Length: 81
Image (cartoon, rainbow, N blue to C red; front, side, top):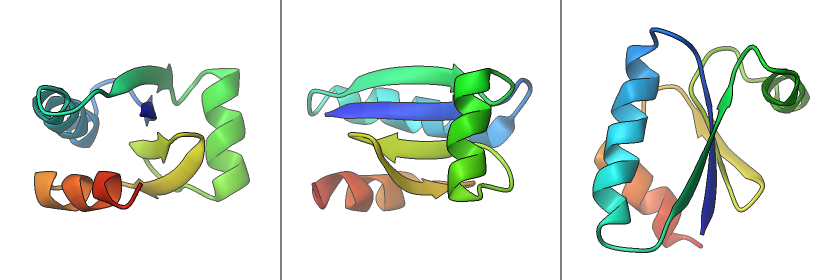
């Protein structure tokens, strides 16, 4: 499973999501790619999907949401794949 995170500097929601992904990666194989909100690739993705603020989560190239992700919500999103 490939996860792309679009993150911003000093974003506490981004850090929470990264930490939750690290915990879940102990249970299942997850390849995490982090892309900066300010990079061209990050801006292109969030503009395309209308994401108003970070973090944005893409799983296997598909937009799955943005903002606060509890570990429960993240588990639910990943279990649907």
